[in-house]
Image 1 (cartoon, rainbow, N blue to C red):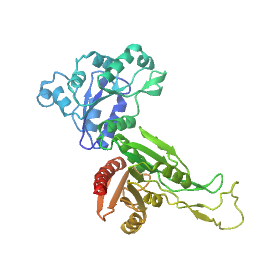
Image 2: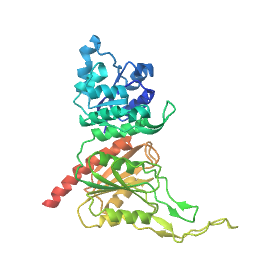
Image 3: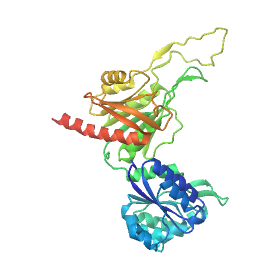
Image 4: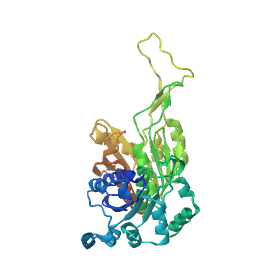
Length: 405
């Protein structure tokens, strides 16, 4: 979603300035182009060379640099920006912006910028709670700036409270939200993610290696694009994406109940969870003890087929399934597409480089109801989520038009 976007990052003078370097790295990794503006105070905490190396672009700091003004200048920086981010934003910088003061390159660029402005404060907790600072923050919000709340925790000054710079990953996600097209507004999207667990006894369970990353990425991307998103997730270590309604489950039967409860009024359903096909026929109340036998037999019972039931539901919805395979990828995926009555299936070869459950990238083939096959190159799961939603949105509208004929 950030591919090719122009982000201007303003860095102010605070100890959290070092985290801005990681933010630049994340932006570049997501495909954005980053121009960094540093205040004089920021250069006391971290060198311009660090940002120049990470961004691949010169760092800007002087308002009256005639050589730069011919080519770049504060007006050019403001005009090229798709988003202007200030992280960390000090109490001093926030006060200047609230008062309309433009006395350096960063504040002048903000005043000239018509793109969205994201302000990410970081300061001592007493400064953050000061009524003057709170008034200034509210004034920026009223002027149309987006202001993130500082995180709470141990501060560099030794105090504990609210005032920490949010983690770079959180700032990245807020950036993606602000730059995402709102082309799914009005849609209700149901996403499933993660593994399920089928208990053998109080200590053991049957499960799989699914991390939930792909499903969470889809849920996050859909929410960023304006959809109402319901996420049904098995056990994962992931945080709930902003704006997403989460229903946590453990077993396949719990996931089945949750999905069937939520799916009826959804226009898009994406089944990215790796659901156990079988469960133990009998869960033991006590720990299964190791006996003298060299083998142990388990009787398994089939779980409900959630995807097949979704395919038989009445009503118009776009249904997407996933097929993770180790062999005969296309053949198995096509069979699943037909058997489950899907509109689209996302097939990925778990043995392919850059694919798999735990990684942050994926390589997939998309197979559509009409038989079309589209190969997508290796990309991050966040990028893949948006690519998938682009195609779902396009096909969904075509399906709706066909249904009206």
